[in-house]
Image 1 (cartoon, rainbow, N blue to C red):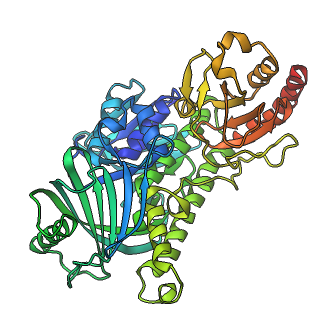
Image 2: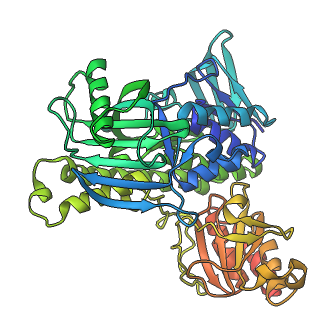
Image 3: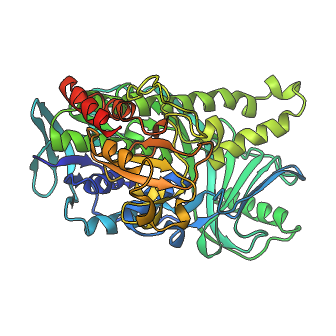
Length: 537
């Protein structure tokens, strides 16, 4: 079977290659550049808990060693503190990391991966599809034809893959603009991020009344000033003046010593590709969507694209076409990103407009602050990971289904579980291997050796039911899960989204849910497994 061709060697393409390799799927990553990234201190990314965990799981490198996890978040309006949030182990803060550091970490992991090959100086110019595969041609020192099973365009906003497939990319241009500076300085609360709206020292000119400060390792900060609509020229002199003014405002009136490392202007666009799949060709990351207004980060969604697509490509690569499963990638991911874009577009007129709700809703300033905080911290409609509640992979009503703290289609909570070898691990550590996860909630199991309870009670029946599933599955045990009573069985997809929660061991319902999560199973397989499940009761 031919490898998966991945066009683009940014964070999304590299993550996809590593995620496929973890599921024994080979890939070729085509990089039109030289294979290195220019260090830019002002080009950074903010990763939420799930995406930071995904990269750590794939690379084996704790990203907290390369970036900075915020200790807290503080928001001000003029001189008034509007809110403070202190993060802890129960609610970890976002992780802030330079993009070239993130990309370098992924590249280093890929270099040690025998199932993935990175090819530099290879610019795509042709794609040809047949029923059995896809062929791509690249320009470079040696023009080359590449044969693949599938092809994924992770090649950014100007995606060649998208253009060659004649996929429209409608949306809005220059939704927001920010002047950006990266600098090293000693500021109050060095590990806390800060959003300051309408600071009292703001001057007239091409800067709007909002600045965000996000800390990085080694005393480095990224500062973003919101720019008003238009195309006012931001000169270096103007930006340096604003740096000095802002630092002085935060430290008592005198500009502290600082080292300016990098500057730039960041423009946010909102666009959404009409299609994310054309036959054996897929889009992911910025090739499929652009977003980022109000603090949301487009890379988070790109990494979630890679995680979603990888586990669906793996069964198709190993076993043959799984069309319903592959189609669900576009259905699930496009709907989530579209909802995020709609939420941002609805909030923008309220937050940035000169009238509207701002003029007559009591407490609107605090409500605006909450919206912005949601976007920056990965909460609510503006920032939280999307749910696949309306997914075509949802099993539908099941007799044994019970409600838990996680709705079907949402990401599961990262609880401690006992693995099949008896070790204690985090639930997220078992994701991304291509297997479904069946998690039994069994209070008390954490204090007893596994050998004492693995053959007791309902465990043998559950183990037999899990073995009969139409896809590889791992049986895990947790002492507790939010909102779940004892003997609840959670069925979790390889990307960490809940399929269903069942009250007790119900082999037929468990099989039905697993078959649905895989895009449906053949009728004869369903009947055979139902018989196996009956025997397991």
